[in-house]
Image (cartoon, rainbow, N blue to C red; front, side, top):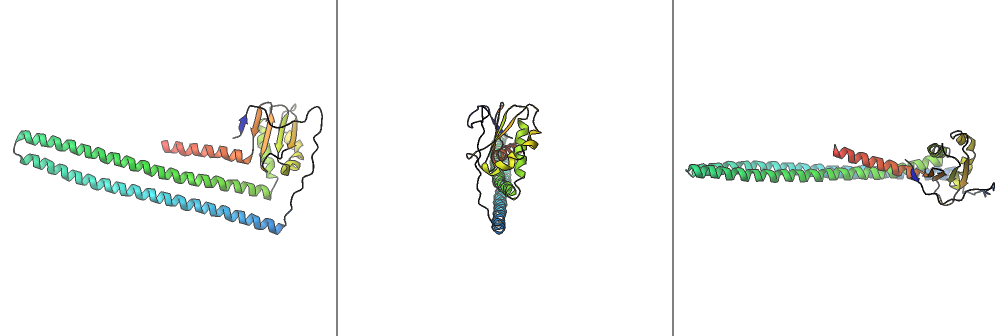
Amino acid sequence: MSNIIKKHHGFQHAQDGKKIGIQPVQFKIETVEEFEIQKQRMREQAESEVQQAQTEAERIRFRAQKLLQEAEKTVEEKRKEWQVEYEQLLERAKQEGFEKGFFQGKQEAENQYKELLKEAEATVHHVQDSYYQYIEQSEMVILELGMKVAKKILNNELEENEEKYIHVVQKAVKEVRDHKNIHIYISPKYYTLVSQRKEELSLLLSSDTSLFFYPSEDLGETDCMIESSFGKVNASIDSQLTEIKKSLVEMIKDEETI
């Protein structure tokens, strides 16, 4: 799901054997109680947004269903009215007493009836289109808020267990495992954690591949950017969620065409 950019630019690599000095990064340490309060608050907010999404989706679905039912009822009533009118026109033509007039009146009645049926059919199609638009709208509301909540949950999990960030890096490394001189850029927050796992990550690569780590202040806390001879790979959580969202939107569109 990673975005691959062929053009090589951006970061500076360590060259000619020079070492990059890493300054120790100081982080604010919260008490366990403060962390638990913050974690609970974020969970409650996520649950609230999920509830809002469900409520909004139900409101849209209810409105769409009601609109469709009302339209179907109206069309059925009109159809019955037109049927009565058609029969009345036939009876009127018969009462004219002349065969020519009868058949002419019958033809006119049939033509009028057909036009009315076409109008009814067009009305039904229009209402159906509106109904499916309502449904699609509700699905997109759920998808948008669902992805927002998913991002919060993933970030919360990383806060609770930083080791899970290693899985993000591992997935990215596997995508460029056959290329030489792999450069991994991560936020200072996870630099120490990832660099300590260099040997483990190197096992995922070919034997002649070199692996380098760099902290970058330009990246978000959960971002991970990888450069190799293949190009640049954006392996951040945001990037992966964006690709997931694109796939889900395509699935929704495919279901609508079935």
